[in-house]
Image 1 (cartoon, rainbow, N blue to C red):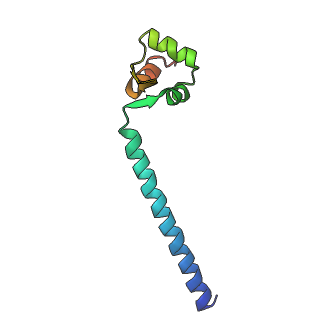
Image 2: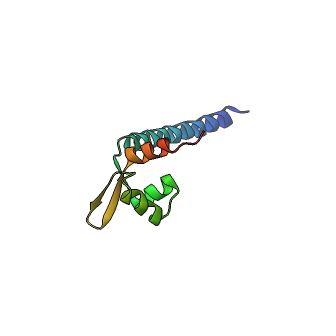
Image 3: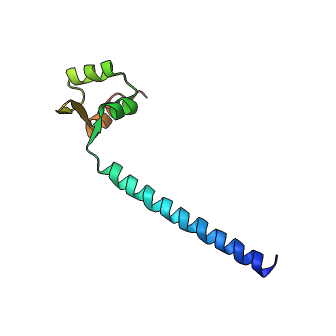
Length: 91
């Protein structure tokens, strides 16, 4: 390899490293945001629990998860969702 080719390779590697560092920073921000979340939307709760809206309503009615209403939106306490999951584990 010539010196010019090596220099171009080094430049490309520097760009890749910069991009990876940017991605790492974004992932860290997202992780911190996710760790600090207290409430999730109904759609997110459905996804986490793999439940239908009717099943979520039943969980609310039976007081199995903590929830609140903010205007027309229903929000679920993330900790209570995790607690529900852990209480219903089958070994």
